[in-house]
Image (cartoon, rainbow, N blue to C red; front, side, top):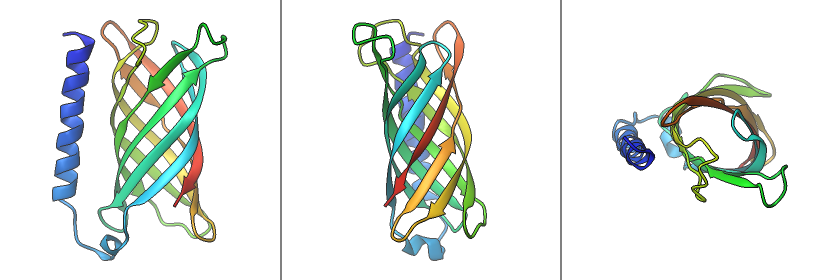
Length: 173
């Protein structure tokens, strides 16, 4: 099975999870809350590429008071070796987010599926579907929310499995 077939199958799984989670949402007071959009800074430590930096966006929709569904994507550049050796990856993810109670700061756990894609198709980057699980915290501001999270992922390539460890910080609007 080649990488493009793995990515197509991963995309099908992501779409099915999206349809399932939207169709099985439980009505609660959280349903009165609209979906929220977050934008943040992403650093990614990869076993294959080293340290990269980039940006990430996420749309999150509450299912109930404790559970949310998140769809996010980011672009990360591994540019520390110079422009000629730079590698860029795009990593979309679908996550279930479980938020624990908190007043000043609320912790949350996120788990899901995604993909690691190299648009340049240089062959230097490990690409394939990913499994991720992480922990984060949200801190209320005046009209928005600050978030920071650590969300490690296993990247399942054609010939090997590798790890990526992103740290993200940003604002939810």
